[in-house]
Length: 387
Ligand SMILES: Cc1cc2nc3c(=O)[nH]c(=O)nc-3n(C[C@H](O)[C@H](O)[C@H](O)COP(=O)(O)OP(=O)(O)OC[C@H]3O[C@@H](n4cnc5c(N)ncnc54)[C@H](O)[C@@H]3O)c2cc1C
Image (cartoon, rainbow, N blue to C red; front, top):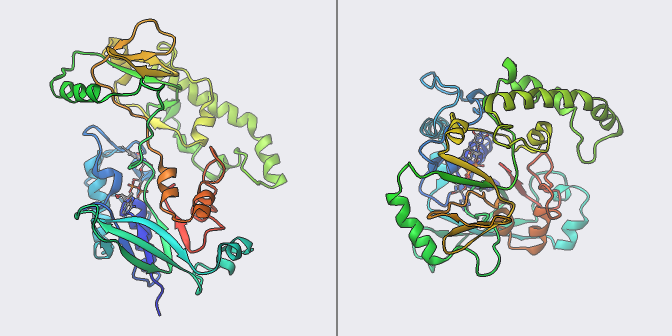
Protein backbone atom coordinates (compact mmCIF):
# COMPACT_ATOMS: atom_id res chain seq x y z
CA UNK A 1 0.00 0.00 0.00
CA UNK A 2 1.21 3.50 -0.76
CA UNK A 3 2.82 5.39 2.11
CA UNK A 4 0.85 8.39 3.31
CA UNK A 5 2.83 11.59 3.82
CA UNK A 6 1.43 14.59 5.72
CA UNK A 7 2.76 18.14 5.52
CA UNK A 8 1.89 20.76 8.14
CA UNK A 9 1.71 24.29 6.70
CA UNK A 10 1.14 25.70 3.21
CA UNK A 11 3.70 28.52 3.24
CA UNK A 12 6.67 28.38 0.89
CA UNK A 13 8.22 25.44 2.78
CA UNK A 14 5.05 23.35 2.75
CA UNK A 15 4.38 24.01 -0.93
CA UNK A 16 7.91 23.05 -1.92
CA UNK A 17 7.69 19.90 0.21
CA UNK A 18 4.38 19.05 -1.44
CA UNK A 19 5.78 19.53 -4.93
CA UNK A 20 8.77 17.26 -4.36
CA UNK A 21 6.80 14.59 -2.48
CA UNK A 22 4.34 14.54 -5.40
CA UNK A 23 7.21 14.20 -7.85
CA UNK A 24 8.26 11.04 -5.96
CA UNK A 25 4.84 9.54 -6.73
CA UNK A 26 3.12 10.09 -3.36
CA UNK A 27 -0.20 11.84 -2.71
CA UNK A 28 0.60 14.09 0.25
CA UNK A 29 -1.99 15.81 2.45
CA UNK A 30 -1.11 19.39 3.41
CA UNK A 31 -2.79 20.66 6.59
CA UNK A 32 -3.15 24.44 6.60
CA UNK A 33 -4.63 26.28 9.57
CA UNK A 34 -5.75 29.32 7.55
CA UNK A 35 -7.91 29.55 4.44
CA UNK A 36 -5.09 30.41 2.07
CA UNK A 37 -1.53 29.63 0.98
CA UNK A 38 1.62 31.74 1.36
CA UNK A 39 2.11 31.83 5.15
CA UNK A 40 3.83 35.01 6.34
CA UNK A 41 3.34 36.68 2.95
CA UNK A 42 -0.43 36.78 3.51
CA UNK A 43 -0.17 39.12 6.49
CA UNK A 44 2.59 41.64 6.02
CA UNK A 45 2.62 45.39 6.56
CA UNK A 46 1.76 47.48 3.53
CA UNK A 47 5.35 48.67 3.09
CA UNK A 48 6.96 45.20 3.24
CA UNK A 49 9.14 44.30 0.31
CA UNK A 50 11.42 41.32 -0.19
CA UNK A 51 14.71 42.04 1.50
CA UNK A 52 16.63 39.35 -0.33
CA UNK A 53 17.41 40.09 -4.00
CA UNK A 54 14.82 38.18 -6.01
CA UNK A 55 17.40 36.01 -7.79
CA UNK A 56 18.28 34.59 -4.38
CA UNK A 57 14.65 34.10 -3.44
CA UNK A 58 13.23 32.04 -6.25
CA UNK A 59 12.08 28.50 -6.86
CA UNK A 60 14.86 26.75 -8.74
CA UNK A 61 12.33 25.20 -11.16
CA UNK A 62 10.00 28.21 -11.49
CA UNK A 63 11.68 31.58 -12.12
CA UNK A 64 10.07 34.94 -11.35
CA UNK A 65 7.78 36.12 -14.18
CA UNK A 66 9.35 38.68 -16.52
CA UNK A 67 6.65 41.18 -15.46
CA UNK A 68 8.42 41.51 -12.08
CA UNK A 69 11.26 43.84 -12.95
CA UNK A 70 12.33 45.09 -9.51
CA UNK A 71 15.22 43.41 -7.69
CA UNK A 72 13.18 43.60 -4.46
CA UNK A 73 9.53 42.82 -5.29
CA UNK A 74 6.79 43.99 -2.92
CA UNK A 75 4.76 41.64 -0.72
CA UNK A 76 1.88 41.38 -3.24
CA UNK A 77 4.27 40.33 -5.97
CA UNK A 78 5.85 37.73 -3.67
CA UNK A 79 2.44 36.32 -2.75
CA UNK A 80 1.33 36.18 -6.40
CA UNK A 81 4.55 34.39 -7.29
CA UNK A 82 3.91 31.79 -4.58
CA UNK A 83 0.32 31.32 -5.78
CA UNK A 84 1.47 30.89 -9.38
CA UNK A 85 3.96 28.24 -8.22
CA UNK A 86 1.19 26.33 -6.43
CA UNK A 87 -1.06 26.53 -9.48
CA UNK A 88 1.68 25.58 -11.92
CA UNK A 89 2.48 22.38 -10.02
CA UNK A 90 -1.18 21.66 -9.22
CA UNK A 91 -0.63 21.67 -5.45
CA UNK A 92 -3.89 23.26 -4.26
CA UNK A 93 -5.88 20.03 -4.48
CA UNK A 94 -3.60 18.47 -1.85
CA UNK A 95 -4.31 21.17 0.75
CA UNK A 96 -6.85 20.85 3.55
CA UNK A 97 -7.55 24.48 4.44
CA UNK A 98 -8.85 25.69 7.82
CA UNK A 99 -7.33 22.58 9.36
CA UNK A 100 -5.08 23.16 12.34
CA UNK A 101 -2.81 20.36 13.53
CA UNK A 102 -3.08 20.24 17.31
CA UNK A 103 -0.46 17.58 17.94
CA UNK A 104 1.39 14.61 16.49
CA UNK A 105 1.94 11.37 18.39
CA UNK A 106 4.13 8.43 17.39
CA UNK A 107 2.79 4.92 17.63
CA UNK A 108 5.12 2.01 17.04
CA UNK A 109 8.43 0.91 18.55
CA UNK A 110 8.94 1.98 22.16
CA UNK A 111 10.87 5.13 23.05
CA UNK A 112 13.73 2.99 24.47
CA UNK A 113 13.98 1.03 21.22
CA UNK A 114 13.97 4.22 19.11
CA UNK A 115 16.66 5.88 21.23
CA UNK A 116 18.86 2.76 20.90
CA UNK A 117 18.77 2.78 17.06
CA UNK A 118 22.09 3.54 15.42
CA UNK A 119 20.47 4.67 12.20
CA UNK A 120 17.59 7.12 11.66
CA UNK A 121 14.32 5.10 11.74
CA UNK A 122 16.38 2.00 12.59
CA UNK A 123 17.29 1.40 8.95
CA UNK A 124 18.48 4.78 7.66
CA UNK A 125 15.45 4.82 5.32
CA UNK A 126 12.66 7.41 5.48
CA UNK A 127 9.91 4.92 6.30
CA UNK A 128 9.60 2.34 9.03
CA UNK A 129 6.89 -0.27 8.54
CA UNK A 130 6.40 -0.63 12.29
CA UNK A 131 5.68 3.02 13.15
CA UNK A 132 2.99 5.56 12.27
CA UNK A 133 2.18 9.13 13.32
CA UNK A 134 -1.26 10.00 14.67
CA UNK A 135 -1.97 13.56 13.57
CA UNK A 136 -4.84 15.27 15.43
CA UNK A 137 -6.53 18.14 13.61
CA UNK A 138 -9.38 20.55 14.28
CA UNK A 139 -11.49 22.60 11.90
CA UNK A 140 -10.64 26.26 12.53
CA UNK A 141 -14.02 27.38 11.23
CA UNK A 142 -15.86 25.52 13.95
CA UNK A 143 -15.77 26.50 17.62
CA UNK A 144 -12.88 25.36 19.81
CA UNK A 145 -14.91 22.46 21.22
CA UNK A 146 -15.32 20.93 17.78
CA UNK A 147 -14.30 17.31 17.57
CA UNK A 148 -10.76 16.30 16.80
CA UNK A 149 -10.14 14.26 13.68
CA UNK A 150 -7.16 11.89 13.63
CA UNK A 151 -5.08 10.95 10.57
CA UNK A 152 -2.66 8.02 10.57
CA UNK A 153 0.42 8.83 8.52
CA UNK A 154 3.71 7.18 7.58
CA UNK A 155 5.75 10.38 7.45
CA UNK A 156 5.19 13.96 8.62
CA UNK A 157 6.92 17.10 7.33
CA UNK A 158 6.72 20.11 9.65
CA UNK A 159 6.58 23.38 7.69
CA UNK A 160 4.90 25.57 10.28
CA UNK A 161 7.15 28.63 9.95
CA UNK A 162 9.26 30.46 12.51
CA UNK A 163 7.80 33.94 12.34
CA UNK A 164 4.21 33.67 13.49
CA UNK A 165 1.79 32.33 16.09
CA UNK A 166 3.86 32.27 19.33
CA UNK A 167 4.93 35.86 20.11
CA UNK A 168 8.14 36.56 21.97
CA UNK A 169 6.85 38.95 24.63
CA UNK A 170 9.60 40.43 26.85
CA UNK A 171 9.35 39.78 30.56
CA UNK A 172 8.51 42.77 32.75
CA UNK A 173 8.94 43.27 36.50
CA UNK A 174 5.72 42.27 38.27
CA UNK A 175 2.94 44.88 38.09
CA UNK A 176 4.95 46.80 35.50
CA UNK A 177 3.81 44.91 32.42
CA UNK A 178 1.34 46.25 29.85
CA UNK A 179 -2.08 46.76 31.42
CA UNK A 180 -5.49 46.47 29.90
CA UNK A 181 -6.22 50.22 30.06
CA UNK A 182 -2.91 51.02 28.39
CA UNK A 183 -3.75 48.61 25.58
CA UNK A 184 -7.21 50.13 25.17
CA UNK A 185 -5.71 53.63 24.99
CA UNK A 186 -3.17 52.35 22.47
CA UNK A 187 -5.98 51.03 20.30
CA UNK A 188 -7.70 54.41 20.26
CA UNK A 189 -4.49 56.38 19.73
CA UNK A 190 -3.49 54.26 16.76
CA UNK A 191 -6.62 55.38 14.91
CA UNK A 192 -6.22 59.08 15.56
CA UNK A 193 -2.42 59.54 15.81
CA UNK A 194 -0.80 61.71 13.18
CA UNK A 195 2.60 61.39 11.54
CA UNK A 196 3.94 64.45 13.35
CA UNK A 197 4.57 62.64 16.61
CA UNK A 198 8.03 61.10 16.65
CA UNK A 199 8.18 57.35 16.99
CA UNK A 200 10.68 56.10 19.57
CA UNK A 201 12.41 52.85 18.71
CA UNK A 202 13.81 51.05 21.75
CA UNK A 203 16.42 48.39 21.05
CA UNK A 204 18.71 46.13 23.02
CA UNK A 205 21.50 45.37 20.58
CA UNK A 206 22.82 47.21 17.55
CA UNK A 207 22.79 45.19 14.35
CA UNK A 208 24.54 45.45 11.03
CA UNK A 209 21.73 46.33 8.63
CA UNK A 210 22.37 46.39 4.93
CA UNK A 211 21.50 49.39 2.78
CA UNK A 212 21.87 47.13 -0.29
CA UNK A 213 23.72 44.01 -1.43
CA UNK A 214 26.58 45.80 -3.21
CA UNK A 215 29.21 46.87 -0.64
CA UNK A 216 31.60 49.27 -2.42
CA UNK A 217 30.17 47.94 -5.72
CA UNK A 218 31.00 44.26 -5.07
CA UNK A 219 28.07 41.82 -4.85
CA UNK A 220 27.81 40.55 -1.27
CA UNK A 221 27.33 37.05 -2.68
CA UNK A 222 30.96 37.08 -3.94
CA UNK A 223 32.17 37.68 -0.39
CA UNK A 224 29.80 35.60 1.68
CA UNK A 225 27.07 33.67 -0.06
CA UNK A 226 29.13 30.98 -1.76
CA UNK A 227 30.87 27.68 -1.01
CA UNK A 228 34.30 29.23 -0.53
CA UNK A 229 32.93 31.57 2.16
CA UNK A 230 31.54 28.51 3.97
CA UNK A 231 35.13 27.34 4.45
CA UNK A 232 35.78 30.43 6.63
CA UNK A 233 33.23 29.29 9.20
CA UNK A 234 33.96 26.89 12.06
CA UNK A 235 31.16 24.30 12.37
CA UNK A 236 30.15 21.93 15.15
CA UNK A 237 31.80 18.51 14.79
CA UNK A 238 34.04 19.65 11.91
CA UNK A 239 37.03 17.56 10.86
CA UNK A 240 40.55 18.59 11.81
CA UNK A 241 41.21 19.54 8.18
CA UNK A 242 38.20 21.87 7.91
CA UNK A 243 38.99 23.37 11.30
CA UNK A 244 42.54 24.09 10.05
CA UNK A 245 41.23 25.69 6.82
CA UNK A 246 38.75 27.87 8.77
CA UNK A 247 41.54 29.04 11.09
CA UNK A 248 43.84 29.72 8.14
CA UNK A 249 41.14 31.80 6.42
CA UNK A 250 40.24 33.79 9.56
CA UNK A 251 42.31 36.87 8.54
CA UNK A 252 40.55 36.94 5.17
CA UNK A 253 37.20 36.74 6.98
CA UNK A 254 38.27 39.74 9.07
CA UNK A 255 39.18 41.72 5.93
CA UNK A 256 35.81 40.91 4.27
CA UNK A 257 34.01 41.90 7.43
CA UNK A 258 35.79 45.26 7.79
CA UNK A 259 35.23 45.93 4.09
CA UNK A 260 31.45 45.54 4.45
CA UNK A 261 31.29 47.29 7.83
CA UNK A 262 33.04 50.38 6.47
CA UNK A 263 30.56 50.53 3.58
CA UNK A 264 27.51 50.22 5.84
CA UNK A 265 28.79 52.89 8.21
CA UNK A 266 29.60 55.24 5.32
CA UNK A 267 26.24 54.70 3.60
CA UNK A 268 23.97 54.77 6.68
CA UNK A 269 26.01 56.90 9.06
CA UNK A 270 25.71 54.46 11.95
CA UNK A 271 28.53 56.17 13.90
CA UNK A 272 26.65 59.47 13.77
CA UNK A 273 23.65 57.96 15.55
CA UNK A 274 25.68 55.68 17.86
CA UNK A 275 24.44 52.50 16.20
CA UNK A 276 27.71 50.74 15.35
CA UNK A 277 27.44 47.15 16.63
CA UNK A 278 30.16 45.84 18.92
CA UNK A 279 30.25 42.51 17.06
CA UNK A 280 31.47 41.95 13.51
CA UNK A 281 29.45 41.78 10.32
CA UNK A 282 31.04 38.36 9.82
CA UNK A 283 29.33 37.10 12.98
CA UNK A 284 26.05 38.74 12.07
CA UNK A 285 25.82 37.13 8.64
CA UNK A 286 26.89 33.72 9.94
CA UNK A 287 24.05 33.88 12.44
CA UNK A 288 21.62 34.68 9.59
CA UNK A 289 20.66 37.94 11.32
CA UNK A 290 21.13 40.20 8.34
CA UNK A 291 18.28 42.40 7.30
CA UNK A 292 17.94 45.44 5.10
CA UNK A 293 16.90 48.88 6.24
CA UNK A 294 13.95 50.70 4.65
CA UNK A 295 15.02 53.43 2.27
CA UNK A 296 15.56 56.81 3.99
CA UNK A 297 15.19 55.28 7.46
CA UNK A 298 18.28 57.06 8.79
CA UNK A 299 17.24 60.33 7.11
CA UNK A 300 14.16 60.14 9.32
CA UNK A 301 16.42 59.54 12.33
CA UNK A 302 18.43 62.63 11.42
CA UNK A 303 15.36 64.82 10.91
CA UNK A 304 14.00 63.64 14.29
CA UNK A 305 10.83 61.84 13.26
CA UNK A 306 12.36 58.58 14.48
CA UNK A 307 14.25 58.53 17.78
CA UNK A 308 16.53 55.57 18.48
CA UNK A 309 17.10 54.71 22.10
CA UNK A 310 19.17 51.89 23.55
CA UNK A 311 17.10 50.21 26.26
CA UNK A 312 18.54 47.02 27.74
CA UNK A 313 15.46 46.91 30.01
CA UNK A 314 12.20 48.81 30.07
CA UNK A 315 8.84 48.61 31.77
CA UNK A 316 5.51 50.37 31.81
CA UNK A 317 4.24 53.19 34.03
CA UNK A 318 1.20 55.46 33.91
CA UNK A 319 2.83 57.94 31.53
CA UNK A 320 4.23 55.34 29.18
CA UNK A 321 7.55 53.52 29.28
CA UNK A 322 10.44 53.72 31.74
CA UNK A 323 13.85 52.93 30.29
CA UNK A 324 16.24 51.44 32.85
CA UNK A 325 18.73 54.11 33.99
CA UNK A 326 16.69 57.10 32.80
CA UNK A 327 15.12 59.48 35.31
CA UNK A 328 11.96 60.44 33.44
CA UNK A 329 9.65 58.12 31.53
CA UNK A 330 9.08 58.27 27.80
CA UNK A 331 5.58 59.63 27.39
CA UNK A 332 4.06 57.01 25.17
CA UNK A 333 0.52 56.35 24.06
CA UNK A 334 1.07 53.25 21.96
CA UNK A 335 3.71 50.55 22.33
CA UNK A 336 4.27 48.04 19.57
CA UNK A 337 6.29 45.01 20.63
CA UNK A 338 8.28 44.12 17.52
CA UNK A 339 10.12 41.46 19.48
CA UNK A 340 9.69 38.52 17.17
CA UNK A 341 8.28 35.06 17.59
CA UNK A 342 9.24 31.85 19.33
CA UNK A 343 9.15 29.50 16.37
CA UNK A 344 11.12 26.86 18.24
CA UNK A 345 8.46 26.67 20.96
CA UNK A 346 5.75 26.23 18.32
CA UNK A 347 7.77 23.40 16.82
CA UNK A 348 8.28 21.78 20.21
CA UNK A 349 4.62 21.95 21.15
CA UNK A 350 3.45 20.08 18.08
CA UNK A 351 4.95 16.89 19.56
CA UNK A 352 2.83 15.15 22.20
CA UNK A 353 5.79 13.18 23.58
CA UNK A 354 7.97 15.13 26.07
CA UNK A 355 10.99 13.11 24.87
CA UNK A 356 10.53 14.30 21.29
CA UNK A 357 9.83 17.83 22.56
CA UNK A 358 13.22 17.90 24.29
CA UNK A 359 15.00 16.28 21.36
CA UNK A 360 13.73 18.77 18.79
CA UNK A 361 14.85 21.78 20.82
CA UNK A 362 18.26 20.41 21.81
CA UNK A 363 20.02 22.18 24.64
CA UNK A 364 18.70 25.62 25.69
CA UNK A 365 19.96 28.52 23.55
CA UNK A 366 21.46 26.19 20.96
CA UNK A 367 20.39 26.17 17.34
CA UNK A 368 18.10 23.30 16.38
CA UNK A 369 20.18 20.17 16.03
CA UNK A 370 18.89 19.02 12.68
CA UNK A 371 20.89 16.93 10.23
CA UNK A 372 21.08 18.89 6.97
CA UNK A 373 18.70 21.35 8.64
CA UNK A 374 15.77 18.98 8.33
CA UNK A 375 16.07 15.73 10.30
CA UNK A 376 16.42 15.06 14.03
CA UNK A 377 18.20 11.72 14.05
CA UNK A 378 16.37 10.40 17.12
CA UNK A 379 12.88 11.32 15.89
CA UNK A 380 11.60 8.80 13.35
CA UNK A 381 9.64 9.52 10.16
CA UNK A 382 9.65 13.31 10.59
CA UNK A 383 11.36 16.13 8.71
CA UNK A 384 11.38 19.87 9.46
CA UNK A 385 11.65 22.49 6.71
CA UNK A 386 12.13 26.23 7.04
CA UNK A 387 13.93 26.48 10.42
C1 LIG B 1 7.67 40.28 7.04
C2 LIG B 1 8.60 39.18 6.61
C3 LIG B 1 9.50 39.40 5.58
C4 LIG B 1 10.37 38.39 5.18
N1 LIG B 1 11.27 38.64 4.18
C5 LIG B 1 12.15 37.67 3.84
C6 LIG B 1 13.10 37.89 2.80
O1 LIG B 1 13.16 38.94 2.22
N2 LIG B 1 13.97 36.90 2.51
C7 LIG B 1 13.94 35.70 3.15
O2 LIG B 1 14.76 34.82 2.85
N3 LIG B 1 13.03 35.45 4.10
C8 LIG B 1 12.15 36.41 4.46
N4 LIG B 1 11.25 36.17 5.45
C9 LIG B 1 11.26 34.85 6.11
C10 LIG B 1 10.05 34.01 5.66
O3 LIG B 1 9.53 33.54 6.85
C11 LIG B 1 10.49 32.90 4.71
O4 LIG B 1 11.10 33.45 3.58
C12 LIG B 1 9.35 32.00 4.21
O5 LIG B 1 8.28 32.74 3.65
C13 LIG B 1 8.84 31.11 5.32
O6 LIG B 1 7.98 30.16 4.78
P1 LIG B 1 7.50 28.92 5.63
O7 LIG B 1 6.60 28.13 4.74
O8 LIG B 1 8.66 28.22 6.20
O9 LIG B 1 6.71 29.54 6.87
P2 LIG B 1 5.37 30.42 6.91
O10 LIG B 1 5.31 31.36 5.78
O11 LIG B 1 5.30 30.96 8.29
O12 LIG B 1 4.20 29.36 6.71
C14 LIG B 1 3.82 28.46 7.70
C15 LIG B 1 2.39 27.99 7.43
O13 LIG B 1 2.09 26.95 8.36
C16 LIG B 1 0.78 27.15 8.84
N5 LIG B 1 0.71 26.50 10.16
C17 LIG B 1 1.45 26.80 11.26
N6 LIG B 1 1.14 25.99 12.28
C18 LIG B 1 0.18 25.17 11.80
C19 LIG B 1 -0.56 24.10 12.40
N7 LIG B 1 -0.37 23.72 13.66
N8 LIG B 1 -1.49 23.46 11.65
C20 LIG B 1 -1.69 23.82 10.33
N9 LIG B 1 -1.02 24.82 9.75
C21 LIG B 1 -0.10 25.49 10.46
C22 LIG B 1 0.61 28.65 8.89
O14 LIG B 1 -0.76 29.02 8.88
C23 LIG B 1 1.35 29.09 7.63
O15 LIG B 1 0.51 29.14 6.50
C24 LIG B 1 10.35 37.13 5.86
C25 LIG B 1 9.43 36.94 6.91
C26 LIG B 1 8.58 37.94 7.28
C27 LIG B 1 7.63 37.70 8.42
